[in-house]
Image 1: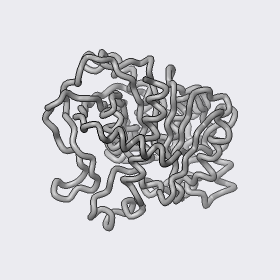
Image 2: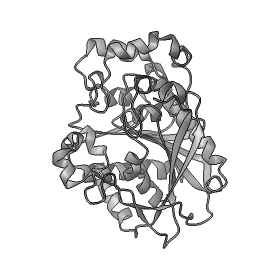
Image 3: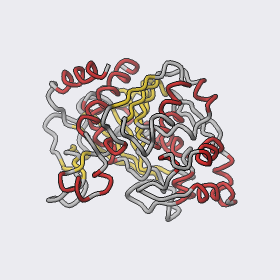
Length: 350
């Protein structure tokens, strides 16, 4: 399977690179006020799509111009769509402390192959704003972020006419992988992850994360805080995004999900993880989803870590930036993730 996907990617890569457009929108998300450090209700949205040939391109590398940290290439900022076709849509959720832009390596590739990709900066849990405890803990609200982002884009006069919401998929990385599963019908269970971390305190998901250190006791305090009662009371509700037809999850957190809801999923689910991932270990996370979700496909990439799925780190960053030092075989990980996602979404959404 691994070799066949790489061959498929090689064939698709032979197609001349198409310009990708990028547009930004903002919508209102009431629950963002509980997560955002400044209690704002705004939800930032990034959209990638096939752009018109000859569009002017702008670099979106992250960091100083002469010494970027992450290499993301270029986009046609606010460029015109390639044509008037209505295209399938992929919703994308970033990882813990990431951002919509951190998923550009994935979103741009999907757009090059004809998809409209909609991503968000999850309030209180992104690398552009100050991280917060509720932003880190109220993770079920992330699926609601995707739901509002899709509604905003559908109603947008410039972008809405180009999307076909009847052909809808979702993808995510790490905590975004959990978000993708929730958007696809899984339900969260805060009790599950609390019990798991009491019994397995050394598991990667139970230890303080590099992006923002949160202890299990701090997370528990959020559930006892009356200020978040409205959000915590809604944790176990159905947060699925209506119309999702396929889920692609990269290194997803799974212990925070209800097992019964996983067994009830009836849409195609494809999961990709790194064999060297100690942050969200496959054996305690993705393997559970593979066992419980009917027909779920799991692939484990040898030699790949959790941070291999970050944007490509520049050469200086590989030695100077902590998470980049842990990002092994990035190009290979990205190529395989793109090929695997295209195999799933092309089969289900085309």
